Image (cartoon, rainbow, N blue to C red):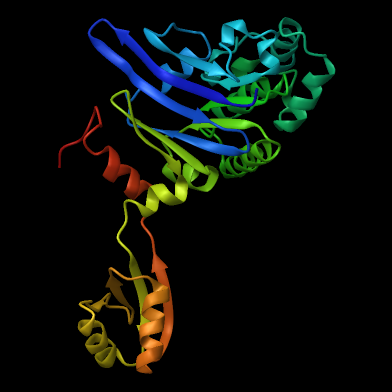
Length: 303
């Protein structure tokens, strides 16, 4: 049951196709980052998966079953789509107790998730007094309430302080390590890079990428090394024989494109050229993502 299956999923609103023939899986044991520009179809896909909207065609299932067909769905799927949705007049404790009662979850579980989310000390405060970060923690506590095998989280780090961001990062990784399927939608590339093992990227409702983090970045970056040497003249000549160019960075370091550190190290050793520093340079997730989605952004600024 700990998986998500999206098959030829399409959602049409009038003439606008918000989701267009999506097919991908979210597998257990890893954190899947769900990326795409505004309007790409991420939120619509999550709503379709949770039965909050109906697909025009195709299917979105959990362990092969529609959310609406699950018995005790909170035991199978936990979701955070909108941290502001909780009723402000209730206390955090009452909010979670109501959810537990509705989902046939033991009351003892409420205390456990309050502790896990770090908000046990404010459990009897009204939600309207909570900061955005505290509401996020409450939303995550609610998602964990049924100890589900599948988690859907939309912008879970929104409003969290640095300690909270580290907490959610470690929590997501530990949940995946326990064999759960974790799908995290985010606009924060730095957090996705630190959190996710796998990426699903949408653009204009279509699937642009479904691959591991490492493969996604490597496919959109040119091999490049950074180095320091005490003999740049000999190194430049040796590289030129292989059609490579030594470029200065102006700080005593040099770069070479089109080669990896292992290859350049072997060349330098063969020529007897000393290297004082040598490392591969890889594109960041943000650079690779922007390269892929440049033609799919709905809103772009002019320069």
